[in-house]
Length: 459
Image: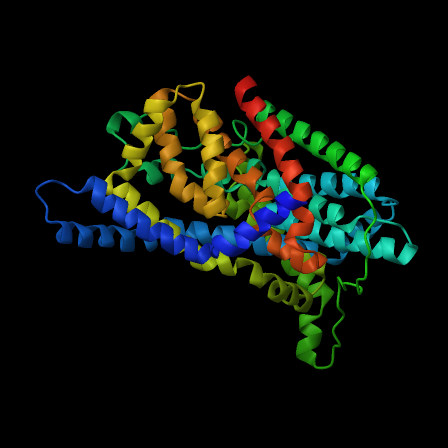
C-alpha cells in the first residue's frame, strides 16, 4: 500500500532514533524554559545555568530511577516467562487451531491482547513468538497463510497494555504518595490537598468502564483481523525453526547445581511464599504495584524454567529489550526536573485549561498522548513528562483523575500501532518488515481510536 510505504519512509528518513529524540526534547525544553519562565530581574546566562541545575537534579531523582528499574524488570521478566517451557508449550498448542489466515489472525490477536493486558513485556514477546510459530506450522502443514497479517496481529497487545495490569501510569499511581511526590513544587497548596495518596486499580484498570472498553477493543480488533484474513491473499513463507528451549549439556558439579530442578524450584517457592505473605492484603485491596508484579514474575520464572541455568540464559536473551529504556529514562527525568522546577508544568496546564472543559479534557489528553507517544515511545517516559500536566489540568477543571490518567494511557498505547519502536523485537523474531505489518496495524489503530474516544465520551 502506498500510504504505509509513505509512513515507513517518513519514519526512516525524518524520525531520528528514540535516544536522539530524547536529546532533542531535552534541548527544546531547556530553551523553552529559559525563554518563557526567566524572571525579569535575572540575567539570562545566570538563569540558563540554574535551569541546567534543575535538569541535572531531575536526571538523578532517586524515586524516578527506582521507577526506571521497575519498568525494565517488567519487560525483561515478561520476556523470560515467554521463553519458559510451559508458555512455549502453550504457544505450540495454540498453533494447532490455526488452519487459515482468518482464524489464525483472530486467535493471535485475541490471545496476544489478553496476555498483554496482564503484562506488556510478556504480551510483546508472546505475540511475536506466537506469530512466528503459526507461520512455521503453516509452512510445515502446507497451509496457505498471509504472514504479514499474522505478524500484525501479534503486535496488537501494545494497543491495550497501558490500560492493563502492568500499565506504567495506573501502576505508579497505585503506589503510596507517588502522585503527591510527582506534583510537589508544581501544584498550589489548594491543588495538593485534592491529590489522593493512592488511586488503586478498582478506579482504573479494574473499573467496570475500563473492563468494558478493553473487552470491546478485544472483540472488535479480533473480528477485524478475522475479516482481513478472509480477504487476504497468501504469501510465501520460508522460515527456519525458531528454537524456544535450548538444552545445555551438564558436565561439572557446578553445572549440575545450576541445572538442578529441585534447588531452583525450592528457591522459586521461597520467593512465592514470601510474595503471598507480603502482598496478600495488597492483592485483596487491588493495590497492584511494580514491586508486586516483578517479585511474582521472578519466583514464577525461576520455577517455570526449571533451573538457574535456563533462567539466566533467558535473562541474557531478554536483556537487549531494555537498552533503550535504560539510557532514555534519565533524559526524560531531566526534562521533568526542568518542567517542575521552572513552572512549565503550570504554564502548559493553564493552556489546556483555557481551551478545554471538563468534558473535552479527556479527549484532548487522549489525542495529545497519542502524539507525544510518536516522539516518546515509552509509556513510563511519557508518564514522567506528561503526567504532571494531566494531573494539574484535571484538578483545575474538576475532571476525575482516574479518567484523565486512563485517557493518557489510551492515547499512549493506540499510536504504538503507528510507531515502530516497540515493534522491533517482533520484527526481529518474525523476520517481517515494518511496511508489511503497517497496513494492518493502522487499521487496528483506527478501530481502537473510535472505541477509546467513544468510551471516554460515554463513561
